[in-house]
Image 1 (cartoon, rainbow, N blue to C red):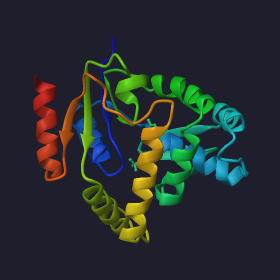
Image 2: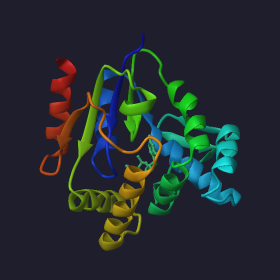
Image 3: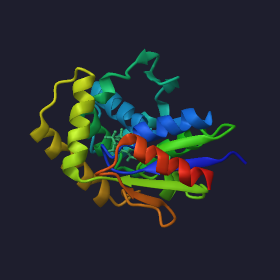
Length: 215
Ligand code: CDP
C-alpha cells in the first residue's frame, strides 16, 4: 500500500511550507486539503450559497469541478490559486468546514489523492480522520503571536494587504472555530509527533521532520 505522511496544525504553524518541502524531498505527491476548503468557500461566496447551510454546501461540494494542476487550484477551469489566499477566503473555508455533508464530500476527494510512490497530506484532520492509519503523523504548533507574524510576512511577500492586529484576531477566531467544532476538530492525533515551532526556523523544523522520517 502507498504510504501517507500527515502534517496537521493551526494556521501559520508552518505546515504548508514543511509539507511542500517534504513532498519535494521524498518525490511524493502533496495534498493541501485546506486549499479544497478554501476553494469551496470561494465557490459558495461566488454562487451566493449561505455559509451556514450545510446541506446546500454539501451539494455544491459534490458537483464542484475543483482540481489541482500542479500547485495551482482550478475551479471550473479557472485558476483561483491567488483568490483563495485572502483571509476572507480562509474565514469562509473555516465556516464551510464545520458541516457534516461538506466533510463527507471532501473525504473521497482527499483519499483519491493517494498515489504512488506516496502522499504528504497537510490540513487539520489528516492524521485524526482522513488518513487515521497513516504510519507517520506530525502536529505542528506555535504561539498565536508567532503564527500571526508569519502569516503577515507571507501575505506581504505576496503583495496582499494585511494588518497585523486584524490578522491576529482572524487567526484567533478561526482557531477557536476549528477547535470547537463537533466534527474533525483541530487536535493532535494520539500517535502524532508534536512540535512547538515558536522558536524554530523552517530549516530546523524540516530537519527534525526528516529525522523522524528516516527513523
Ligand atoms: O493556511 P491555513 O492553515 O491558514 O489554512 P488552510 O490550511 O488553508 O485551511 C483553511 C481552513 O479550512 C481552516 O481554518 C479549517 O477550518 C479548514 N480545514 C479543515 O477543516 N480541514 C482540513 N483538513 C483543512 C482545512
